[in-house]
Every structure is written in structure tokens, then in C-alpha cells.
Length: 242
Image 1 (cartoon, rainbow, N blue to C red):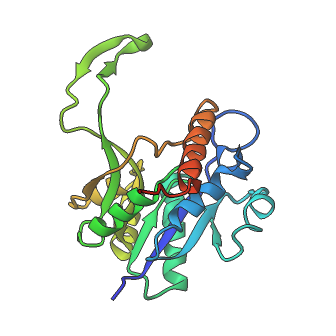
Image 2 (tube, rainbow, N blue to C red):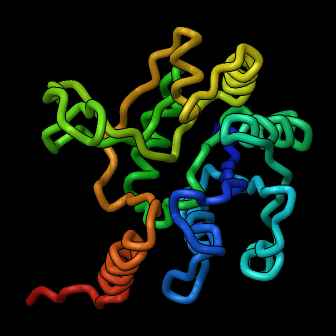
């Protein structure tokens, strides 16, 4: 029997690093907002039965830019940090769906998630009691910084992975462990870190470098190229063999 999975997309951030008056999740990408692309990406898998988006309390853009395209997507209000916003979203999901077993948390600013990566995560993650995340092995030489942006040392990259989203966890366990982290004053940078602190060892599922996160304005052209190339491949007629 297919397990009940809901997706959660935290979109309450103010995009301070991005700069400009428009939060990065509402920047336009091929005629749609970045957030709209991210919602569409997590809806690609048949096991994802519903999507909830977490919005900032003062959000004025979602109703105009996203809700008309996704009227069935539910929304709730976030908190003063990513961890609290995700926790609000998880508790909202639990309140509306007592049977939900798993939650798939995906960044609002990752519009290029490929269907193949999502399928691999779902296949392996749902079979792991510790959950799973998409990630890619570190490939660049890593430097640790000292003061004034000077190099302190080179960091051994063997065994290091760069975490991505989605991240897939049992809903109740994630609520419990994220709540414990927040209550203790700890602010995990992603959901996996909250699970790690509780003794879990989530599975690393190899993702793709094309699953880019929009952090600054320069990331938008790259995301457009990825999506355009993907659309071109999907639109191409099948090759005929004689």
C-alpha cells in the first residue's frame, strides 16, 4: 500500500542575501515565479498527495502570483526562522491529515528539481526508517577562512556532501526532533540536522548539480537554462529506428 506523503515548501524567508525588494521565491523564471516552479517540481511524484506552502505573515505576493495556478495547495504562516516556519508547517499538516506518515520538505528556491532525482529519493527514503535527503558529493577543493577572507587551511573533502532538498522524513519524528531543537535554542540549518541531533542517520541519496538553489540574482539565468534544456528534451519527438 502506498504510504501517505505530503510536501512542505517553506517560503517565509525575506531573502536578505538575495537583495532587492522582491523575495527570491517570487522572482520570475520563464514566465512563472521561482516558487511556482518549486511547487510543480515536488508534485511530479504520484506518492505526493498534497502540498503545503509556509508564508511570511506579511506576504502579499502569493495570492497574486501563485495561488491562481495552484488553488489546491494549502498555505499556513511561518515563524521568525526557517526552523520555526518548518515546524509551523509540519504541525499544520498534522492538524489537517491525521493519517499522514511522511513529509517531503523542499526549498522554495530550488525550482529545478528533476523528476528522476525525486523518484530516487522517494524509492530509497521511504524504505529507510531514518529518512533521506538529496545531496551531492563535494567536488571542489574546500578552504577554511580566517579573518579578512584569507585562507586558513584546506579542508579534506573526502566523505563530505553538499545537502540539497527535498528531505524526506517520518512526519511525527521530524515534528518531535525539530521541536526539541528549537526548544533548546538550537537553530538547525536544515531538517536533517534536527534529526541528526536526535541520533538519526539519514540516507544520502545522490542528487544532481542541476538542482540549483537561487541564492543571488546571478543564479536565475542558470536556472532558466536548466529548465529550458529540460523542456526541450521533453518536447523532442522520439527517435525512430529503421
